[in-house]
Each structure stands twice: as C-alpha cells, then as structure tokens.
Image (tube, rainbow, N blue to C red; front, side):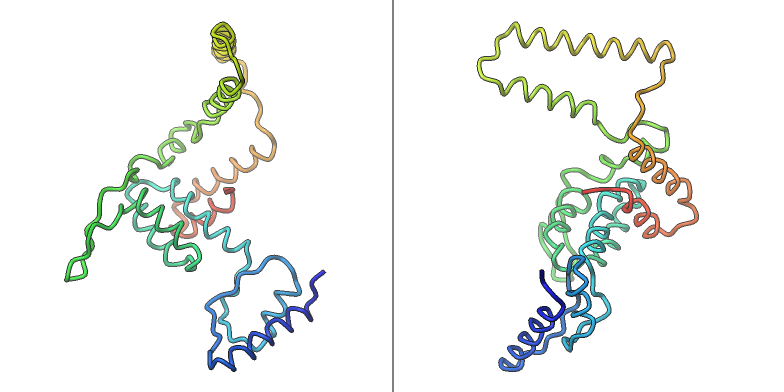
Length: 230
C-alpha cells in the first residue's frame, strides 16, 4: 500500500531533478485519485501548485458538462460550450476538439490574417442532437428500447449458420411482443417500472430543468452533469 511518505519522497525527487536541470515546477493542476496520502503530499509538498488541485472526480464532473449541453436549447449550446471549454484542463483537449469539430462549431478550414476563423459546418449541428424539446414535451430522451433490440439482433445474427426460418421466427416473436405492449398501453396498463435508482435520477434531472430560470447556464449544466454517467 502506497503511503504518504512514499509520495513525499517522490515529490522530493522531482524537486531535486528540477533543480539539477534548472527547471521550475509550477503545474496548473495535479490529477490524483482518492488516495489520501497522495492528496496530503500534494498539499504539503514544496512543489509550487496553484489552488486548482483536482481529483479524478472533479475532472469527471467537468467532462460530464459536455453531454449536459444536450439539455440546453440549440441557440444556447455554442456559447455554453465555449464556457465549458475554458474550464477544462489541457488533458481534455482531444475530447473537446472532437466534440467541437463534430457537434458545435465544425472543423477549422483556415485562419485569416485578421484572426478570423473559417469553419466547415459540423457533422451534427446543435439543432440536431439536443433533448431539450424531448424534456419539454415529455418525450423519451433515449432510444434504449431500440438499442436493446439492436443488441438482441446482433447476438442472433452473430451465431453461426443462422437459418432463414430462425430469423423469421425471431422477427415474428419481436412483432408479437411489440403488439402486446401496444395493447397494454391502449387499455391503460402502467408502463413498466423503472429501477428506483433510475427513477430518482430522472426526478433530479427534472428538478434541475424546472429550476432553470433560477440558475446560470453553468450552474444548470453542473446540476445536470451530476446526474449523468460516462
């Protein structure tokens, strides 16, 4: 088990190496997990760090601000993305660039002499992917049922020597199940219950959305991000 003394020794060695090579160690932040020894060593060691010592948990929360953008209206997304981008550390730059190029601003075509940037249209513009209106009108914000069917079909089609009659039987079985679900809904049967954990999460998300008028954009995204997983 790694102790605080070992981390102290590590930082001492780093300091000595920096002095030998005439380097000044002033990292903007240090990423660490939940080992208290490493956290204490960072706080007390002579390496000059600023106050942005972040744990993996905080970095994860910041990253989750990106999918949380989907809960904004399309007109808000570009500016909100730029705010989130400014908060993320350099380590997240590949994720940020990929998301920016494909989902927000588009890839940079050229930079003009006056500093203006010309971009291609993003592959999936902000008008296409938000769940803002889904939440507003009570529509599902995921396609879990469709994705589950795709997984079942992939398992079936991945088997060796699947005959045409087996495929037809599976399609008929799926059709019967869908028709049964439709009839259940028609006669007023309640929808299948969600897991308590999922139900609580959806309730918290809805509370954040309801409180949107009392929150800044970043506070709203942070509230949503707390309830998302990567």
